[in-house]
Length: 306
Image (cartoon, rainbow, N blue to C red; front, top):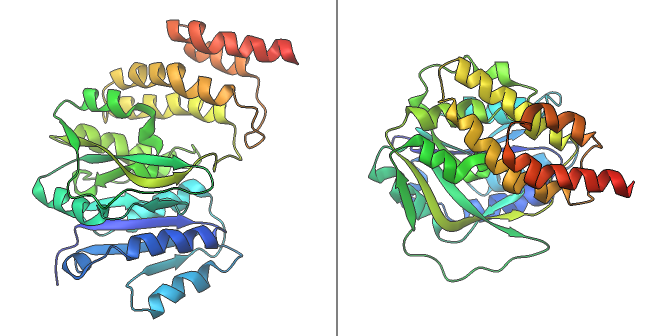
């Protein structure tokens, strides 16, 4: 039996139609030459729709899928972590059920993984509303190699929270006991993604758009709390454990303030719970010039409009 090189692990919950498309896109690219070195996992968080039927449809067609269905909804963090912890391959790709790999890229990713020992392979996404179109199948991947993990973090920054955008070398983590301590943070993936980045000799950022991702398909939580206080708490805990460089905090916060928060705060989306932005943000970001230049004025305008 060939050695497993890549586990694609899909956490899912009540999104059978999207999971169907996700599996179809992935399975259509599993050729005979990589079939023996890829593991596919679906971790079902006790879905009440026809998720089981969708997975069995592909199993009955002869595709090897390890299907796990939780006896109850254990929450997103625990289900995402279960995907990573159950994975048996050297590299683990936790893949969201509403994302779709673009044609031709799975084989190229395998070739890249075989070429050298990499920590994190970051992938760009093609964000779409409604539908998307793709060009001809690629013949090569355009990427940048980073030997300095801080430069890699500066490139990837808060996109390290994007599960589908990160393929991780699980073999670089000698101990996984710290992961459960990050449950219920809504950012449990950072507990393995960032330590792996700093354990690796090199990390890679792929410039190509490798996956198609549905825009505005998230919500149901307090965005400013999670990506403000919560994100900083996770980073500080990883710093205290000696797993990452403390400079990651300032690098990440500057990117959050310059692009992430302005983008979301300006949207009047009902997908996220209402929060008092000033009381949440000022204690965390008061020492950042970019906060006062970008986020603070937006928060004030929102208060005035009320």
